Length: 353
Image (cartoon, rainbow, N blue to C red; front, top):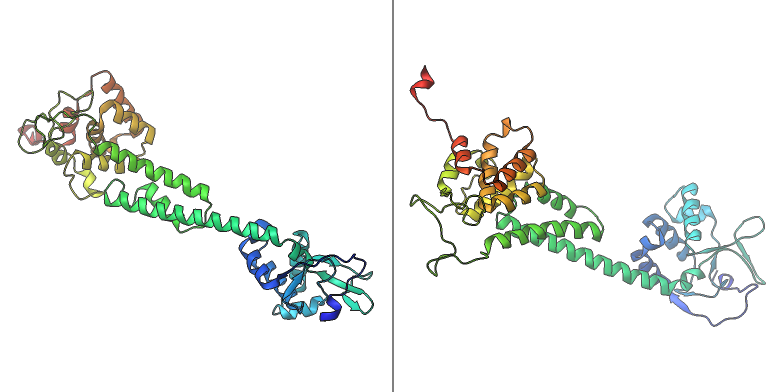
């Protein structure tokens, strides 16, 4: 077999470059996607390589011919059906990994005197540079994918720890499912961009853009009517004159507790609650961001919680919030009235009439 498989027929003598056949096969396995090969086709190639006696594979045409019958190959492949075997052999030929040296009757055999018919494995050796390059590219792509996955996992954790997005938020659910699937780098980048946008918005919310404090220890000047908590809308264009306390909001609006049982400690916490709730209410992001700009971050938080109290009576929450934005733009929005309407009705004699 060694002598016959290396008989050169009808080919000029050329300098021979050889490659380790098993190293080439392992590298090709890493780059299989770029050559449109699957693991079963590679298994057939491995079986063909076992019929070549030397470990070093020559790149000279005709010096690495093997000629097992389909029956012999099938036996070496643990009984692979011959129809399946022929399909995988055809795939190897189309990919240029092996070439056929056919006899007149398409039988595979070798004769002394320079005749050998079967599968020539030398194309595999000649493709070595492309195979190694493709494998290196696949390695770089996989490194990028691994890095993106790690960044998505880290960003998800930061959003959860900061209560910016809850685990059941649609975006968090999508990112969790994607981390469990095999997806390309572009899909991962899109998910990471969406997560990081939420993280950036949180940073913008938490950092005051203007110092209005009367004392160095304060971040904002609040208008208060009670000693219970902070007031609302120091930055909102519509509600600057409103003096709504945070406790008034959390005591009047209770439906949010079904989703987020922990009471917000400050207005930043309340805004995070609103960011979690608005997708569940069927409000798109652009509508919410427009409302946030026109009503203010604190005002839109109050509006979302008040809407949730009456959500069963609101047919189109997105249109409803746009209406509130329009009223705010006209200076007609009354958040205190919304909070009063959202709270429990007080009992009076008329209730029992």
